[in-house]
Image 1 (cartoon, rainbow, N blue to C red):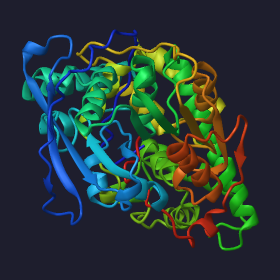
Image 2 (tube, rainbow, N blue to C red):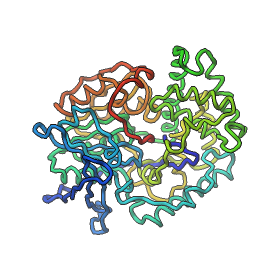
Image 3 (cartoon, rainbow, N blue to C red):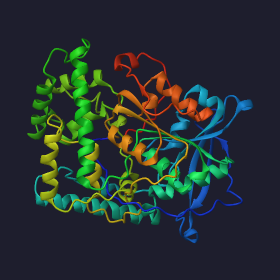
Image 4 (cartoon, one colour):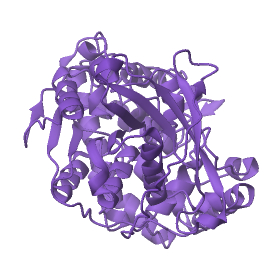
Length: 491
């Protein structure tokens, strides 16, 4: 998760299926023009209803960016892409060079979109004073828990006040209907889509809602929207964090270039965590509390960038700043996160005693890192959130035969492997497992993964059920050329 000095996040939700409105006979047009800062890329806007169930209540605009197929004579159509978040700007990512492999880019127009509330689309904006107010995301007592609730409530109300109705109408089921409008406006009879991380929830719910309009969905690093409660959510995220930590220590043991090679990495991290709890970690001008420290560690699990993490731990042990691993420029906190996440998840936290019980239990799940900073801040960030949960959790209900392929790393810090297993079981889609580490299996420079995903997107060729692709060691991965992953580092 993107963790900065301020952790603004949230969590809560519950989902019901809905009946989609029929596609318009005359889909809206996109006025494509050259993007002013991205040569070779076209930018456009699409107008859609603010509320699909009440189309008379006004409209919003969705920002799009398109890079045309490099082999137009053999063009298949468009591949719509979302980088996750929630709050990731797909149009912005495509302008920055994000794409799938050259094989896919040859046959498809690459189209990124900024979901409603995000980026250059009609955006969710919240109050700066509310965002920067003190937020005890790890409350130490009942008074701090009440302060956490008050922070979330005030932040949510500021989003509603400044943004208007869109702040509470940016749930994923609304995004799904936006996606179908984009498909129609692009002139595609059926949707070809690559979604990573939170973008998988969009793909899953698109398959539920529009099964006849799917050409091919590749869902990479999957959400599990069937999770019933807060503890199940927190435990899964924390187990994934602990697994990644154990993989890191194993890498350090076998890799002589690791800055902590030959040392007791667990003991080093335990000492640093204790110093963070005492308020003694980092420099006097930049102290790291436990949330910031665990965020520093887990942020390096996404790549993974284990060499960078080991050096940062050495610096912290020596009393030096670890800015190289915890740079604010690397960890943006998008304002839309809570408005979107809290409309998609119902993860109730009713009291300080309940939250403290979860924290103690999670320390047993992860004896080294104690909790998942992403899971914790997402759930805690929705406690007291004032807007309703419009799209609550439910098990996937997808008609058999919808063409979907699910990808996931075996060791993923944000979307646990168990979530992908459940999504595959519920959807009936095949699961391709990358037996390595990190978030976004397509971008781990595994030819096995990219070949299988590309064959599915281009030729509708399924890789077969139970397929595994071998891990690529991080130090080998860093020396290989490959497609650029999205910058987004949340879900």
